[in-house]
Length: 405
Image (cartoon, rainbow, N blue to C red; front, side):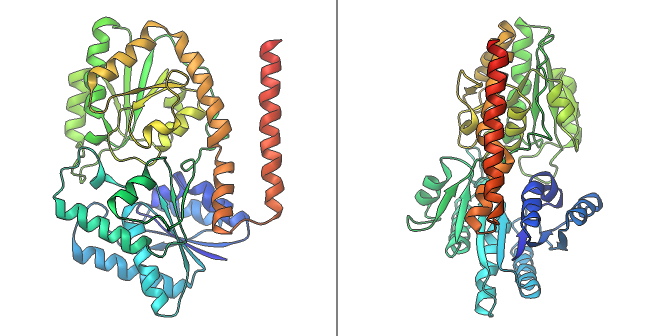
């Protein structure tokens, strides 16, 4: 089949969806990926995978009607030009305008099957969202139109389906399937022994206030009053154009003020995960299931995150991490102090995180489910996944035997 993928950022096509696109190619399908920005490195990697790249203009964070109409028109043209069997869209604007474009294209004779990969409802539905009521109502209506004829809407957490029904975005008859996020490559993110001397807390996220950056900084100040040897690190790109974003200048001022190390974005977070004790994401953004949490699980790290949809889904409190109150530096600091007071929790909960990653979030298993639901899975690959599952069980059994021995 021919698959057309709509995204809002070229980088995400490889970093977040690369394994999925490769799985489509490996199953014998033609894949065209669309994004609004030119990224030479990403386009090269896509070409090496056998994925064709197509540029589609988009104002990622704006509300310009003219800009969004231009995006819709470019999506319709892309569908008419490529004549895909399947259109798959992820993130808010690609889903809204990709789903609407698929309906318009159907009126013109092209009838692709549309699937939406809902990696969270988006910033307008976050708990701190300070948007006018008319804007949220407009987004609800646009979502409803786009998803009305979707074959399947995939959600990443246990709350999104009920919330979408409560908002009137979907009804009970529409097909919604929960998947374990985007999954994580256990080969790309292998486990490593956690650092316990000193205890080092790591936050990886876009530098936006609703990712809990300020709460993390304030919690670091509180924790160091009792445990001055603890270290704190923030890794993330600035979001100057985002209403909740923290600018380059402000980020460096905050890092200096709180004595926290700031790494202004990276293409490879693995060295930072390997060098940390505990991964922290105090987000109150309306997440799907944060990819960074899955990467931390696979790396064998305990998690501290907020008790909110998406963030809490991969956490078993007291087993592989701790849940804290959103927008509460005090609650976050108390959780951090528990690890500082008892470093053995780092190893115990980190091991539990790795088990959960292997059991649930292995990207091979997640992509197998997605391709099966979209009817893109070759029958010969069914046995391959069974072999993977058997191998995982055998490896875990051998680990238990060695541990008991």
